Amino acid sequence: MMIDSGPCLATVAMTTFAELLSHSFASIRSKAAQAILDLSFPLAGKKQACQSGCIPVLSGLLDDLSPGVRACAAGALMTISITTEGKFACLEAG
Image 1 (tube, rainbow, N blue to C red):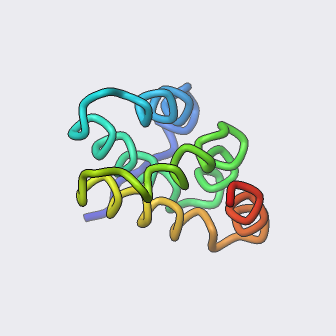
Image 2 (cartoon, rainbow, N blue to C red; image 1 turned 90 degrees about the vertical axis):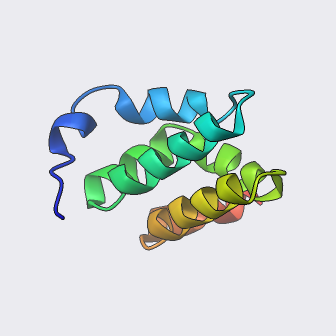
């Protein structure tokens, strides 16, 4: 199924989801990472992910206790790191 993420990227959705990555509930962290993954498929989404500061948080979530959070964070980082800017941002995040 194709979803047009353009309207979401025109709002503050990426920033909102980046903030939710630090939520105390694992289910919310997982859904936020999944949303960032989904929004990062178009090039504009990858750029927004790099600019929103979510990459260091996603990188930290790779050590989360929840396997679902780890999987969604890894997927989001994989999608974002397709671009050169994303690769450098992931490297800087550690």
